Image 1 (cartoon, rainbow, N blue to C red):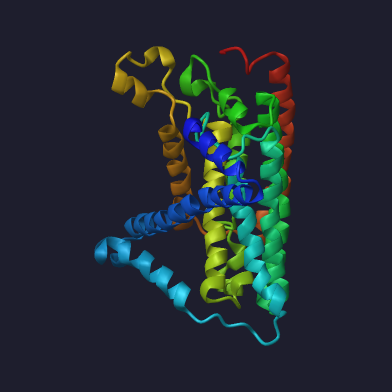
Image 2 (image 1 turned 180 degrees about the horizontal axis):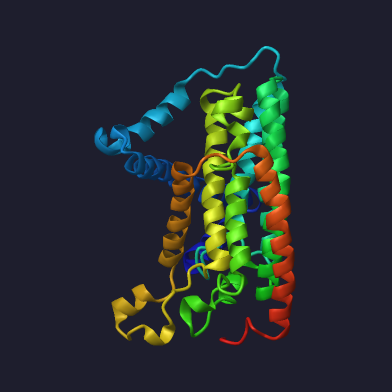
Length: 358
């Protein structure tokens, strides 16, 4: 991949400012287009999986569920964009973009393989924490600019929920940082390599942090059972109650892009990313079979598919938490667990537990 990208980059940069702008646009498209396509397939998979769990006829039998996704797209694109007369015009239009841009910008440092990464930043972990925290500003702005009590209440819930669970996620990543000794995402993945296969991954010594991180990711994306931000039985659609058409689609796209991002990051931080679960000594020295069973991006996609399906499973299976239960879980359960396990991780690092199998 590097052999193809570097000549293209050097050729464009040779044209000066125009070439640099073209290269920036290409990098933006390299992030945006795959994410949009993945979200489209993810929506279809969500309908199919929930339809199978709930025995629904639409997603399972009527056109095999494919037509529903196209109907959603055309409905949102061609539906009239209605703006309340009491809303702040500029901020009302700006809020969906503020929610969407961080959801896409975070993908710039996410590696798909040892060489397949847009920006192999040394401070990639800090960049991700910053980007994933900024999306809530769009939600708060949408709730305030709509000048609606339902929207404002949903925005305040979102702010409190993100603050609560962002702390737990950050503490969980402190444990990963101690274990890997690096803020670079590719180096974090390679720190999980070893002779024992999947037993070398960080999910074994950091199991409580692994569980806390993924559940906090579900809460931060406002998905069931933590979807009090847009609880239909309480505040209709929350901060999105006044939005329609393409503006609503931007919030929808940001939510699903964040869900896929959380699935990727969980796989990278705790399940070895693209590393094979099979120990290298067990892989036969056969050209095709050895390649398939060895390290590769397909292992990363398989792990991401599992976590993305867990989002759907949670939505179909668990009832919604009350707001006070969500706050209690974040502040009184997750944060103390992560702080205690950070201390345990520091002790394990002191006794070289993370480098024993390498």
